[in-house]
Amino acid sequence: MNNDVIANLKFLDRYQSNSELIISKINLDDIKDTYSCDSKFIIECKSKIDLNNLNVVDLYNTKKIYTEENKVVFVMGQHAVKMKKAFTEYVTDKKIVNLKMS
Image 1 (cartoon, rainbow, N blue to C red):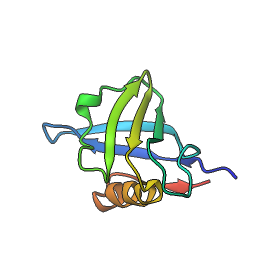
Image 2: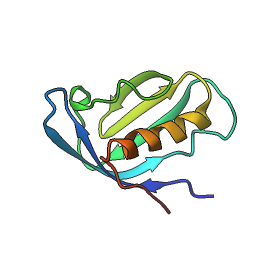
Image 3: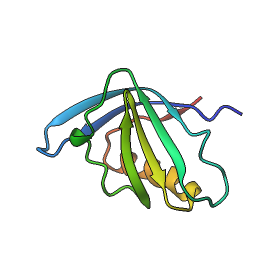
C-alpha cells in the first residue's frame, strides 16, 4: 500500500513571515499503524531545509526533529498513529497545507 502524501506546505518562520516549503513527498511508510517508539516521519523536500525557519515545535508527541539534506525527520516517542493524525490536523488547522492522499 502506498502511503505517500504529496503536499505544498507553507510554514511561518520564527519572525512570522511566510516561508514556503515545497514538498515532493511525505513518506509515512515508517509510521506503523501500531503504537511504537522512535518511529520516523520524513518529509522530503525539493531543496535543502533550514530547520530554524520551521515553526513545528508544538507537533504532537515529537521527541526529536532534525534535517538530513533535503529531508525533515520527526522522531516520535510513541503513539505514531496519533502523530499522523496530529500532523494533518496541525497543518490543516493553521491553513498552511493542502494534503492529498495518493
